[in-house]
Length: 493
Image (tube, rainbow, N blue to C red; front, side, top):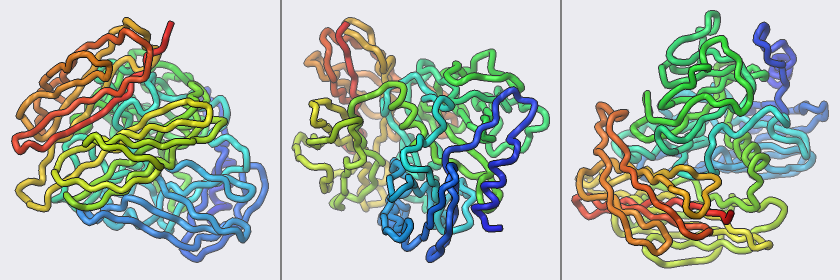
């Protein structure tokens, strides 16, 4: 019996019992292949396709030798396609199927750990043509927050938000789950699924001690109908109803976003799906980005979404390729890509090349417009370092705001910010509406106690509807700046 057959048999087994949660079969099937291997795959609807792995091409940086991009060439029933792997890439249509490649084995060459349970060269997920990526009605967006409201780390992106990427460490934490940056103590976390609470508040349900990760006061583990374990981490507080053995329903409040546990000092929700549907039988991360995208689109129905991520890492003078082509329009097409750079210059087109003469953290604005005139924004973070070892530290910033949804004229909006790697100066907010700038000063994070300290807060009120591009920046003792942006939508009432 081949690996795919074994996985399909596993999927047909009873997932769990005595939980009160209905068993469900995932819409996708999983296939792990080696280079040059070809295999017939049976989809979840019984159809068969022939999948072959032809080539894997990596793009690594020259600072840490970290994988920044992967292109995977496959054959589907004899037709050749090239896929991106992880890193905010969605499944693509290929012949009569949809597929993606969440991870390739070469990430293990310099990873801090095996998050994927991968023993072959690449992992693929396959869906029937036209199928939802997650079973309809079984998965909801797990945060009461606007899409891309803040910083994120997803799909094997090297972690970068807190103190920035550590150039002295060539072991990379490729973030296999999805991190949502947000407002500490404000953004509500919701259950993405129905399920059984296995662990909460550092207590674990008897018989489920073999969890695929930390058991802490700030972590909740929920077992779903697919037999998947979903982890929600760094909660500022947990709802009293959420306790081991309790059952939750999709959309139920679990708690509030925070920076507790091993957060690195930035406020975020760590959301990760784990299962043993791997050829190795080990726990592996199920890339959640496509499921989160689909859930948000179904619930909130944005007309167009801009995607300028993942972030970039470069030396001064080194060229960076900014790419907005992952942006999508729902039911229309994107007609215009505009970039507004930190230095005030502008350019048009989805892909742009940039270089930087000074170290710092830059935030490049992507504006996309579809054929019906709908507009969306996202921001590409670029962390730039000097080759001089004395100047490897740069200021790094996390901004957030709350609420991010249903803001009307006259509503108070709280803006929060924290800057890492400097004690010098203040953060300065420009709210994008012509009002005076506002200086604040966040508490300096302590690497030995990064859950302590406060984000600096200020409240702003917008008088008129519109989409506002908010900028916040701070300079360190070397004059190196961290610049960040947020986009705030104020709707008429």
